[in-house]
Length: 172
Image 1 (tube, one colour):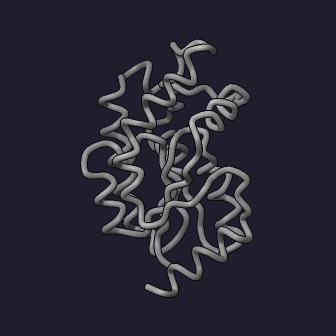
Image 2: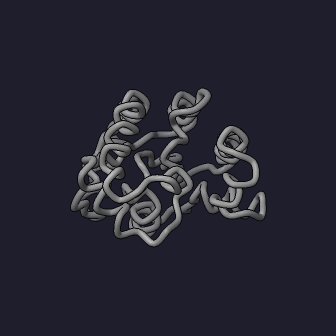
């Protein structure tokens, strides 16, 4: 097994799926957002507030590159991780990338229900959420679609997903 990078929009379930997938496959799980918080001793929200998005993206890249020392495992990334610097290319060179693809409507529903604070949504009101997600998805799709595997994130079955990953990775 190699490093598998889960990418996708915020709320697509990368961390949730990653934890369960790592158990199903018997490999380590790393959440890059949690790793960044541990490294800098700040929540993602506080990091954004204190230092801004540009500094956050630099720190995110640094934490991402530290994952190269992991011989195998499931690594969930932040929603914007593949969209900055050379991160999508770097992940593809250093592992296998999987895009958990979801519709803007499904993401909107999940994010409205989420209790987790999201820095990019700080100033987005309820009725503005769907257009915000649609616009961001349109911008990010060019990066997300470069993934080695695009997998539907809605109603995802861990059993089916882990079987598909094993099949794909064993055929390479």
